[in-house]
Length: 244
Image (cartoon, rainbow, N blue to C red; front, side):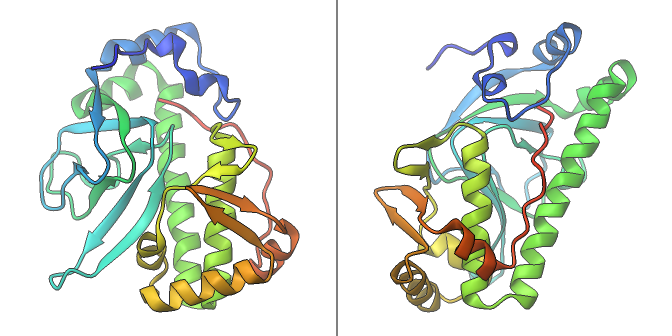
């Protein structure tokens, strides 16, 4: 097992995507951190219907939050990238209505949820950060709802690709070939409420239009202006996000 990384040396803080914490705040985060855990791709982090007393920060890898119907159909609510905080999307200590699955091999920082109240009592700045993170995820889910409810298939896929590209780029997952992009066509279909066949045809059409390339797990936006126009996407200024 890999050696745990001290919070003071967290590699995510070097990406510039996250707001700075005081030494006292970092020491407090370290004090309440229970451990680090590794989860293999395809395994559950939170299982539907299970009660959980744990909160997580995704340190490395990708995951996704989802819910399944009785016949096995799945809706992906959100893709989770390094720095995302997991566990506030349901009532603490109650059965979770959704699941969280590792999309790639992932490393997570584990926190007991009973220490959440200590955060608010002793470090109100961190408490505000947690509130901000919850509101930010709600905005992401709202945008996904807009896509599923009103955007065409091409617009939905263009929006998702832009959104995930920018998120991955901001946390240091970019390289000369674009950004690391592990979701497959089934994940995209489940996130956008499309059939797998329709997803496949639309992805091929957008690629033939010269809007993006995707291969060997790397996504590159070759015409981001046209992609943004198609998605009706207007970029908001990126601000540094809290990191717990």
